[in-house]
Image (cartoon, rainbow, N blue to C red; front, side, top):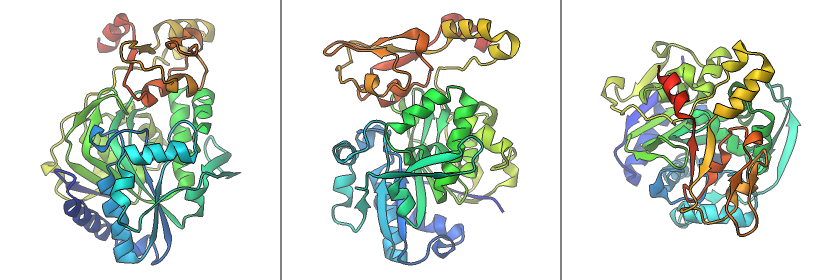
Length: 383
C-alpha cells in the first residue's frame, strides 16, 4: 500500500518537529522497517547554497537536528548530514555552506556529523537514461540514505522536492554537465529520476514548514505552508506535495515522468494518506515560476525553423547590475559557458548558446538574476 504522512507543523520548534518525525516513522511502519540499530545513515539535506535558515532556501537545521537526534536516540545510528551544492565540492566550499545555513551551530552539542568526505565514484546503473553514474562517497558508504527536501518552486522544473533533492548526490561541478547534455525538460526529469533511484533513499521527508513560491528555488517568496510530508516512496511524496500546493502533475516534469514510469500514480485516491486529515491541511496555491518551455514548436515545425523561433522567444536570464556583486558564481557555474564576464566586470548573456537551465539564477547569492520571456509569449500562453 502506498502511504504518505502529512502533519501540520506551524514553526521550527525542536520538540514539535521531533514528535512529528517520531510519529511519521512509526506510522510508516517503525524505524526497524528501514534501518537496523547502529547502522550508518546519511541524511541528504537540501543545501543549495550558503543562505541563512530564515531565507527558506535550504532544509532548516532544526528539522535535520531533530531527525538526526531521533535516529541516534531511538536506534543508536551513526548519522552523517550532507549535500553537494553546485560549484566546487571541497572543504572550503562546504564549510561556508554549513556555517551560513546554521548547521555548524545546530549540531555542535550533538553526535550528528557533517560530511567531510569529498570523494566520489562511478558505477554501472541500468537507468532509463543513465547507464553509468557518479555519486558522492558519503552516500555510497552509508548503510542507508534519508532525504529531507524543501517544498519549493523551481525555475526549470517548476517544482523541486524529494526526487530532485537527490540530484545533490552528484558531485559539485559534474551536475553542470547534465544540464548541458539534457536541455530538454523531460530528459532532465528522467535523469533526475534515475539519480533518485540510484541513491535509493529509504525514507523521504519534505520540509514544508516554510516553503517558497514564485522564483524558486532561491529567489522566490517565503510561504508559511506549515506542513511536513513523509513517505517511504519519494515519488509518492512529490505526487501529494504538488497536489497540496495546487500544481497539475502534467506540468511538473519529474512527477509526470514518474507516473509514466509507474513509480507513482496519477490518482491520489490510490495513495493512503496518514497523519493529519487531508481536508484539514490548508496550503495556499503556490505561485508558479513565470517561465515556460516552448518545446511544442518542435512537434509542429521543422527542427531548423523551430530551433530559430525557440531561440528568440525562449525564457532568458536577465542580470540586475544594481544588485550584482561581480562574484562570478553565474559565470563559473554556467553549463553551456554562455555568460561572458571579464574580470572585474558585469555578466553578459551570450543568447545563442543559452540552454535555459537557469543554474545562474538558482545559484546567485544576491538574487540578482531574473528570468524573462517575451510579453507576447505570456499573452499566447494565457490565451
